[in-house]
Amino acid sequence: MSAGEAGEAPRIAMLGGTFDPVHLGHLRSAVELREALALDTVHMIPVHVPPHRQAPGVSSMHRLKMLAEGIGDTPGLVADDREIRRSGHSYSVDTLASLRERYGEEARLVMAVGHDAFLGLPSWHEKERLFSLAHVVVLDRPDHEAALPPELADLIAGREVTDRDALMAAPAGRLLRLKLPSRMAISATELRSRVGEGKSIRYLVPPAVERYIAEQALYGSEGSAVAAIPGVVGVSE
Ligand code: ATP
Image (cartoon, rainbow, N blue to C red; front, side, top):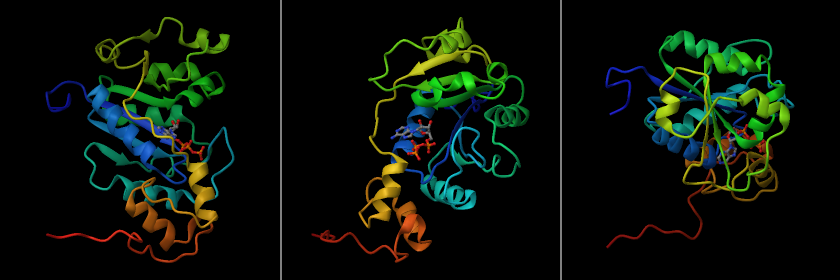
C-alpha cells in the first residue's frame, strides 16, 4: 500500500529531463525510485525551455508524447506537461512550487536528479528555495565518490540523511543519495546518433517510442513504420 492510501501525507517525486527521447534508463530509474521511496507518484516532466542547456531539437510536444507512450500504463508514473504549459525558462523551483500547491504543505516532495545535475546545483535558480519546497534525492552512480565542490558542500550542509525514513520525516529540506539497483548505460545523445545513422534502438527504448520516432521521422529517421523484429519468429508448440 502506498503512503497516500494509508491516509498519510502523499509522497511525490519530480523527475525532470529533456527526454529527447525518453529511454529505458529513465523509465527504469523512475520505477525503482518509486519503489525505493514508497512514492505514490513520480511526475516525469519534460523541460520546455532549459535554463542550462541548448533547447532540444525535437519539439516539447513530441518529447511529451514519447514520454506518455513510453510510460503507457506503468503504475505511479505520469507524463506531466506543467513545464510545457508555462512560458519562459523552465526553472525547477517554479515546477516544485506548482507541485507543492497541488499536493499541499504536508506532502513529501522529492526532486530527483542524476549525479551530473547535482554537481551543477549551485548554479540553479533560487537554489536555497528549492530546499524549502522539496527534498533533493541524488541518483548516484558507483563511479561518483569524489569530494564535492565547496559551493555544493555549503549548500547541502546539515541536510544529508542516510535513509528513507529520515527523508520522509519532513515535507522538504533534506538530501538523500540513492543507489538504484539497475543502472543502464543508455544515453539519449547516443540514441539520437543511432537513429541518424540508421542503426537500431530496439531494446533501448520502449517499443511504442521506437514506433513513434519512426512514424514521425524524428532524429533523421527515414519515417518508415517499424517492422517486426528481423530474424525473430514467434514459436508455438
Ligand atoms: P542527453 O544525452 O540528451 O543529455 P540524458 O538522457 O542524459 O540525455 P535527460 O533526458 O535530461 O538526459 O535525463 C533526465 C534525467 O534522467 C536526468 O536526471 C539524468 O541524470 C537521468 N538519466 C539519464 N540517463 C540515464 C540512465 N541511463 N539511467 C538513469 N538515469 C538517467
